Image (cartoon, rainbow, N blue to C red; front, side, top):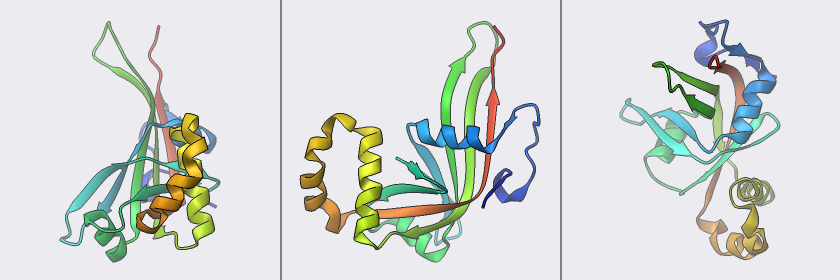
Length: 165
């Protein structure tokens, strides 16, 4: 089971903005995309946007089977994922309302074809539900060249700032 702390196990600084685990999971569920942060093989931080879907205490994303992100994940599977939900810009002051979730966990390639297809189906239902009639044909054509990765959520935190009306 994971705990409600920010990245690295530190306590959330702004307790007035801290939200519970269910809130954070809801942000992951509705976000348009997340930013996956890894340590590249040259030791430099590397962040990349990914389309994500959650299933229980795991988050899935799809990707090419090679590249800088994959090399980094093979070298060090520990990742951070930031998801942003609703954002509201104030029209009367210099501030922004937001909701976010931060996840840390271990990322691994999904090698079981049934799990890969389930994850891809969940991604497609989230992002392109109107095109699901074409899912089976698309997966049959692309599965051999599509990487699917799972982040096992170890820590999660949620934050929100609500603008005053």
